[in-house]
Image (tube, rainbow, N blue to C red):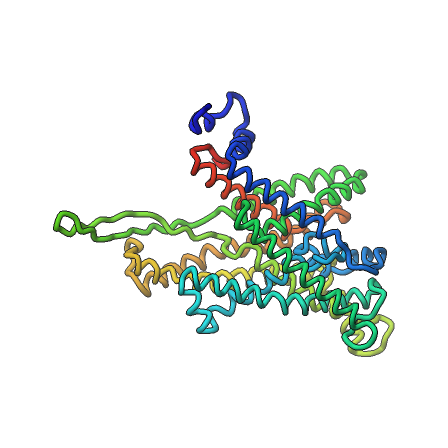
Length: 448
């Protein structure tokens, strides 16, 4: 029986990544967590293929080819909306609820007080988030079904009055229950598996769509030069995402504390650093920006009528054309909105952390900066400066599909910026957690 230190050294010539994977499966507890995570993801994919009855598949496929909003929502459902399954809304209502609560915490005194009560306060806010998910899911389910019904995808009218009331209620209830089921499954992964469960649910849905994307690549076989350029650009983009996701500004922090020993008081000090991420907002600015820019264009497309002499119809036609993904203005607005929301969300979340107050309470200080308000002002200046890099990077990633399409000439194969951010971010987070689990057991990890 070899010791963990001997196992950690691995076999001669064996790749480090492969050795780390084998080490992970040698640990019973870690093996259980990995297999449990994979089992939940398999169940999620099964649920994603349980359809709502009476759906016109041909009309549904045509709707997704022409409607950007539905395609954006399909991203967070893991492909379930494209099949109109009971999990068609995915975990998007929960994400919406989480974002709303984060924005309301500094505004509502009661929520702000809960956020300062430690673990008990966080659990209470988490409970409120779950309760708020239900009405959001009901309204979103009704809106999605209404759009699908007007597009001819559903055989009946979506209404709470008349003979169609019972089928409407049944579909909304089943879709809401599907959302809460996915949230529960995600939390099971977080508790008993590896990684963030909600993120892994979205991750699993995106990965499930990769074979279809590869199949679409064969459509462009006649443009091998453009296809090769697309692959190279995608690899470079993934590299940039990794760099900016891991990039951080380390602010030096020193701690001074008094220790009573042998009847005398001794002053001890230690130094560490405060990591401030360049991209603190993650992909949230992309969600805000695309939601805002897609919704007006979708509404305008329903009111547009080029043959009508009505002012509203002609204005809607012009707005629908200007806010379509084929328009240059569309991508300019996306870039600007992403940059704006990156600053907005980062500053809100940063203010909620109360870093200057926590440092002062724990006896920490930044060398050369007075504790209290001067420390807060200094950290604010630092976070604003480094957020410029993260915001411009997110803006570039958001418009990357448009730029790649213009350079490669390939339109049948699209790279989703949000998908790449999710894939890379979730993969890094999961590997980081596996790394920590392996290092706790004296094994070498994935990251070098």
